Figure 1 (cartoon, rainbow, N blue to C red):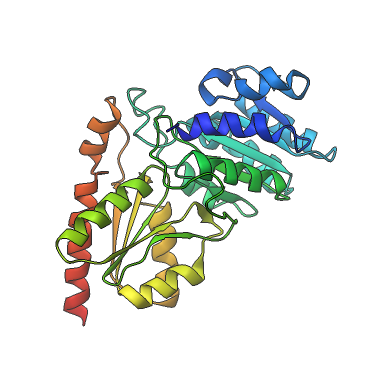
Figure 2: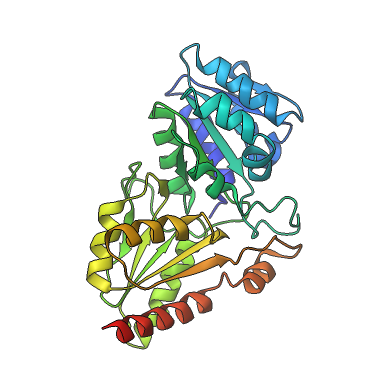
Length: 313
């Protein structure tokens, strides 16, 4: 069981044998784990120093020479400090740059609110041309990194700091940009998660089964483009949805799912996530409890949204 940031570093190192791409980092290669690629392919790695904005524009320029470029740093810096360069230097000209953003969300631990980025998905989702991926375990991380490198255009990849329980097995599933993955079927409520919250959705589904509630679980690693067809099909089947993310409920997965359903098939939705607050210092599990990112909260939200469904019916 690895963290998705560790899996990201290993994926870059392994994929470097198959694909020609460069990796840049902003003085955080040990934390982002791009050090794995740097050791193996030093001629294709550049440490840009503590200059994230410059790194993004440098990556954009390099990509115009015909090779994909991966730019890595913490999510707070990739989406926040370098936002203007990502928007105008990478996305606007549709450059072939992949942004590897680690340490996303509050469950990274004691770094505190300044470094616990809870708005990065919202920022990246809102940029035209930008694809947004958030894998849930080491195997999906590899698949997402591979898909990003093969994809022509800007991609934002979000990774966590702490070990993530494995949902998949090596070679046991297929990932595709724009598609979600059904982890388990259900008829009463649909749980849609990203990142570390996918495993918590799965645990919640098992607890719900013990009290006679059948919960479908969907891993929506492709936040943008999102799998509209899959979400609508489960909305029609179960009649209610719970989203779960280590991110602000404004503009993230919950926002994406709600926007889609309002336009196409309005049903009750409950959003598990950061309730429009900044992060705090603490252990990952203390923070999960404080911000309501727990299995128990997903179970509570499931019961609540099923109740709302029954009122409407």
